[in-house]
Amino acid sequence: MTEAVSTREVYSNAWMTVREDVVRRPDGSEGIYGVVDKPDFAIVVPFADDGFWLVEQFRYTVGRRAWEFPQGSWPTENDGSQEDLARAELAEETGLRAGSIRHLAHFYTAYGHSSQGCDLYLATELTPGPPEREITEQDMVHRWFSESDFRRMIRDGDIVDAATLAAYTYLLLDRQD
Image (cartoon, rainbow, N blue to C red; front, side, top):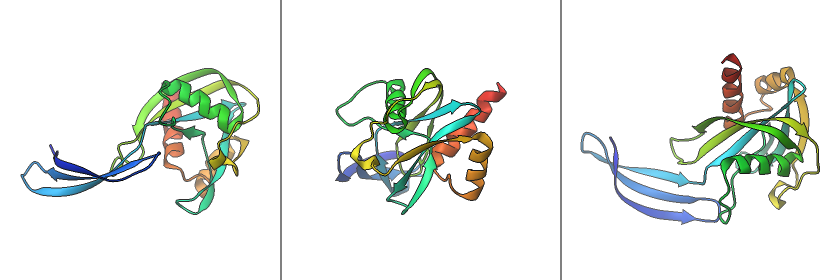
């Protein structure tokens, strides 16, 4: 097993820390890992009327707008549960409130360079309300899509978010059980 020999913080802000670890591999050789540490996030699949509620926003890091399931992490001063986070993100980004919410999975979206994990929830029995978006979400829009539209949007490159694609895969597996 690869183990850390030393670690140093390279960069830190309110959302993430970047560290560089010197590691020792099983054969005794040493190497370097760059690791992005971020708090775990929640992603929620809002399912209603044989379709999904999605949000679209501009993602600065890739320079484009894309559709995705509502998702986010707690600010550093909040320590609520992951289910509370899923409910909060759903309400914040879409205005929807879930009468029922169920945990489907925990997974990692980029474990080759990041320690951040994700908890996936299925939200049903949805009731509408006004979104309460953060300033960074001011260009966000939300809309309902049929599942066939959702699948077409994946094929057409309108949905490219890894967490959203993984969430849909887990949902399909859950339906088979």
